Image (cartoon, rainbow, N blue to C red; front, side, top):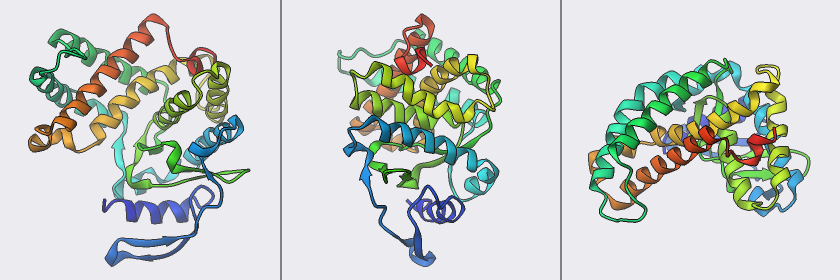
Length: 274
């Protein structure tokens, strides 16, 4: 992944508090050397404090990145800005229509054409609504999972920037929140605490009463942003691979589930309790 080298170098120099120390770089090899981040991967942390700190530091890092989004895009960061996502909406759903028609398995059932049309319309409306919040585009991480987050005890370091992006900041939190719920399924009140740690940084940009709705929309649209920011859906050859085809079908099903949760009000606790 050639974009990882320039992005890692730029981010390490511009945001050194949140990345491992960059020791050396060798551009002709797309290679770099970083100091080891001392601490535990978030996947190894059973304490809620480490997760809350990660959410808080994620928001701080994104706020610190606001002035460098153009530079990140020039280095190859994935473009997950609302206008770009909107431009990919129709071609992506045409692709998903084709993949659903090809499905041979009965379970889970393929989404019907009218369901995909409704989902596309809901996505378009959600993009417009999220854009109206006027939260600025920032650094994002489309592969933000607990293996790529190091808790150092009093701070957080973020790794693996091959899938760095520029777009709505809440997308990255949605990925972290999803992993949190999987790791702590019984900690209902803790979900809300994680969201509060993240959103308190953004209250200067968004009124408190709108935060819950914004989190819900971002959780829904983060699935779409991840899907259209990957490359395989643009390749007819890759879409012939059963795993790839199944992957995009699963993304569409998850989007439908999230859209229904928004409509019925049965949202994750981290959104309901904000």
